[in-house]
Image: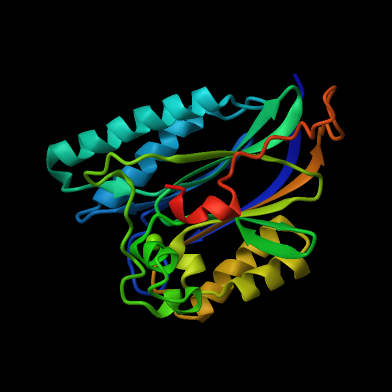
Length: 270
Ligand code: MG
């Protein structure tokens, strides 16, 4: 089996300017591109994010993964983080966001996974779109109409997340299948990037810097320039070639399945 999505990837991670330890962890090897942002005192966050990434790393090297394989690996990862909390590490926890290369009848899909407030964006046709939805207090306030999206970055509650792996959370991971296209550029990042740089600047770097490694490096540099108050991680993934199955099926329907919640049910999609 050949890979349904051929990628080029660049990544960078930095402790930032205020913290001595980098509790972010990442996996940037096909078919998995993931960021985990650990939390919890006494290095618990570091161990939590590392445990989750090492569990998922078992799937590296395959042309594509099945959704059930990713689900099982994340379930095992969650147990490992829960065990950390049991050995005196406090309430160890971590976010997890990113994509896995998946295939449906041979066509390439981004299996998007998300829990917490790390983010996955897609930059396509010169537009930046956040394809994950944050599990955060601020996101809930935006959806309830209590604060404006533009005020989120300055809100004092911006670091409070409502779902995690570990940290006493039993909440669900979002899994969405998104049809991939040749030329897609994805960004997976921790909140140390997205809370430091506005989306307009992220979009500008992704538009301007062709090489994915140079783009990841520039994003980190921008976040540091703006204060670097948290650990910062960025993975930039370019879909160099995607096997697609466009057109209509026997019944005249578009066969591409996009399982993201639709805009009209956005507020209730949790
Ligand atoms: Mg963070």
